[in-house]
Amino acid sequence: MPIEIAASILNADFANLASELQRIEPADWVHVDVMDGHFVPNLTIGLPVVRRLVRVSPAPVDAHLMIEDPDRWAPEYAEAGSRSVTFHIEAAKAPVRLARQIRAAGSQVGVGLNPATPVETVADLLGEVDMVLIMSVEPGFGGQQFIARSLAKVAQARAMAEGWQGPPAGAKGLENLKLQVDGGVDRRNVARIALAGADIVVAGSALFDSGDPAEEIRALRELGR
Ligand code: DX5
Ligand code: ZN
Image (cartoon, rainbow, N blue to C red; front, side, top):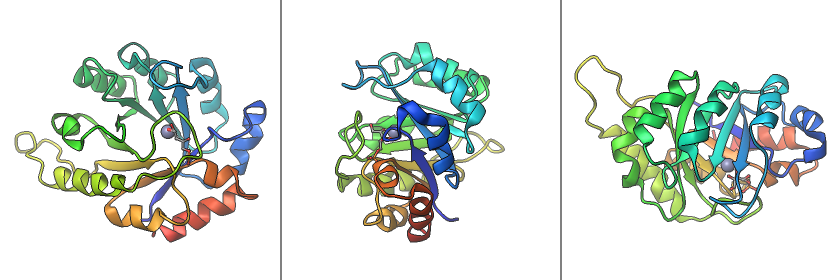
């Protein structure tokens, strides 16, 4: 399976989002970073904008919620039409219930881990989610340097999924669990990230700082093959 590219619009021109979406048309996902100024020291966009983005986006919306109270807000991002909704384990108060609510609202579910949060923190949640997002920068801003330790965390999450003691026979295992790496991804590290076991990489500044985001998406996909 070629690696999937989730294009983060954090570094796009927020005054021209519709046309910016067209520039990342070959992406597998449009990664929308929702920040509330509390969980992270930055404030971006919220529900009203996401509701509109899902209508015009060329690729399914992958909502990444860096917010203090996902238990309250995450299901609404699913109802808004996001194909996938990721909340952070550091913020969720009842992650199993929350994962089930997001799924019931019609979205895939992701759980995110900050760089200093061990992979073991989500061990008991793996059967409830479709994706684990491993942050490879401190969340909050685009354009930061990739934290190399994240590669070991990806490999560890993959091993954990493979060794997972699933529910009773007949229930679904973790073969389809996706691992996503977010932050500082570029041409120099995407092959190593793929090799560590990632299924999806998020790229923001690597795309929008280049003259041609669509071409950059294709290059990352090719290098991560
Ligand atoms: C950071 C966000 C990332 C960010 C990635 O908090 O979650 O999605 O936009 O941007 P780059 O690729 O520039 O690190
Ligand atoms: Zn993100």
